[in-house]
Length: 193
Image 1 (tube, rainbow, N blue to C red):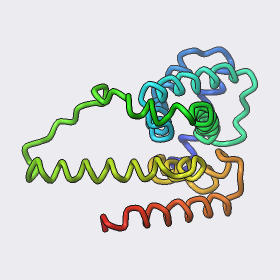
Image 2: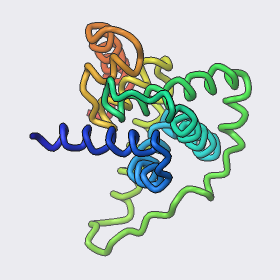
Image 3: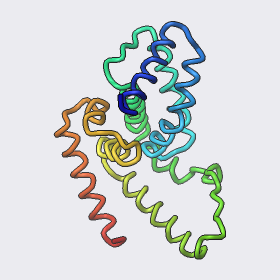
């Protein structure tokens, strides 16, 4: 049995225990997946506070759905379907306010990264951070479904079949979304090559 199959069985087994009333198993699932869900949601909505709130809602929905849970798909597919749905709804609901919130976003809440002495120079680090910010901004300007597909593909390392299940579309539609997204990103970031 491969590692992916073992992980699938373990997550599904945990969720089935939650279904039977085992709160500790829910805590294990929460600890295991919370960080990746928050990161995914942050990249979708581009606001830390909103991402945290949405992550709480994701896990609240997982818990509320425990009685009807059936392991028909990978647990992470089901989890990211819930997260994507909530993120897309949040983006639609706050379309008008989003640009103002982004301008007012207090970046002092962002974790401070320590720079080790082995780095060649602070200038190189700043250039790297600027390039990273530019890539994130370019991803952030993609249409919502393309952005979700790119984040799941590149950052969550999900397979086309998983992304298709999350977005409720075919694998060929996912490939098309990713192709268009990567073409757009290539054009916007061509100056970085």
